[in-house]
Length: 267
Ligand code: IPD
Ligand code: CA
Ligand code: CA
Image 1: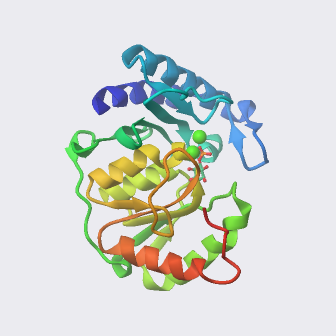
Image 2: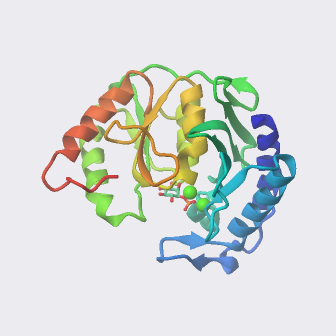
């Protein structure tokens, strides 16, 4: 199933690669930081149409829509048509198409496609995770050997102090940091060894639904930052890593979240 979803994500990726005059089509959604282009909408339309053709009966929960088609549906696609829109607008070639299939409370299939490198990450529950068909198995390293990928949760301003504290605590005890600008790709790169651990203090399900399955099927762990179960249909913080560094990351986060100024800031 995830191969077929991946083939549709690849089709959508062609729209991203062929995009022209991107800057002319930029609009702000809620704030000057929250950008959308005509391509975000076009890619979502293509995904909605093609997924409905191939998999009738499933609902659709996409970033670029007012109303999600999930009522009464046991399963639905959770879709970010372009994750890394700011990178896309700036011409930084680091964005992807992220499609997850959620069925009865858990992720069933996932495909994340980076069109710039023709990298297709796929996963199926109990069927493993793959990069262009090659199985992924995460390395087991502790925080001291970990390259940290993180996001700055720019749309959730009250979580900024927690992000800053996390960076402050982790910086001296890890290898180094990267902030790539696409949470879905961050998760995929944790799964394939481009990074070792990822956190962000608040994300929307379409940012992490597909990527979370790719990490867990590569042998990793994904939870909220306080260690609780990842929520897949409402916004949530995200912590991803392997069996050694994930508990260490959670311990650090839990300590920070106990600090008087941090209480109640992280979802
Ligand atoms: C954003 C990216 C970014 C993360 C933001 C997301 P978008 O998604 O994943 O890395 O830090 O929180 O909203 O807006 O490019 O689809
Ligand atoms: Ca996103
Ligand atoms: Ca997006």
